[in-house]
Length: 401
Image (cartoon, rainbow, N blue to C red; front, side, top):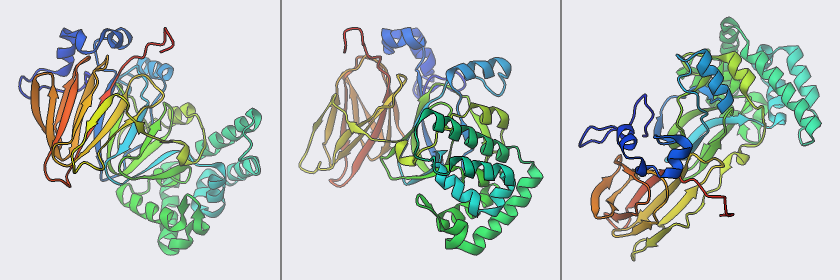
């Protein structure tokens, strides 16, 4: 959902694209947004329904995106960065960022197939470097740890297809045989049973894939509905299962390295990553109450809420609204920027000015700048009318606001 030229949204009644609509009426964006990003939406809004693992990937920062696009426009069709946010609609699982170093060292010590691919010397060097340094956040120690992590990860990623296939067979066999005791019981964030199940399941989806080994380097994360992650440019990740709302900067740049039949660019991935390492809790977002909306509650509306997911970038924020019970209503103050609203559950009415439309699961609406937005739930007292609203508003810092 958006104005990306590869597939801009279309008005179902007129067939006109949202890109064309905005280009001919810039006030729908707001002058501040147009001045910053041009005559297009600065974000893409998506729903992903993940039944099979999506590729291990990262999105380049702005400078690298420009370089990749100039060098290889076929595989890198944009010159823009692509930070992104994922909000769970259903229970979700994924891989996100590098694990704490002690966990990686544990797997290199107790997963023979992984150690073989990384190499004995590289594995020993990594373990020796990070031992006792995991909690030292000094610049010198952090730099040393990142260098060791990059060396071990690069050694893994440079394995030949034959080496990966042979090691994968040994890995899957051990996972199937050991179960709970796989990888000596695993690590605090992912038990041996969890890791064994992941290996077996992902091998069925992508047999003998390098991704089976990358998962030992990355945080395994589970989100419940409403929980969220923010991924900066150059953060490695893979989505494994579940339904999510995804919002990102308007770009189509992806550097892939596993769990995919598409173009892979392993060297670029190895070179571009930040090699930040941290527990997954540090990448989860804490939503907050959205202050620019008024809830009109009914007798049955206990549980209604309007919450904001506000990542540390300018291109987008997302508001999740849950209206419970028939007649619960939320009124959003006008903002100086565009919005896209999608309903993921229940049904209701959506109004902008004097215009009112039906909205239910799967319906999508564009809302122009400076428009007051009202949504009201319909249905039984226990029904939940759930919407997500992505928007961009450029804050004015000139007077300290």
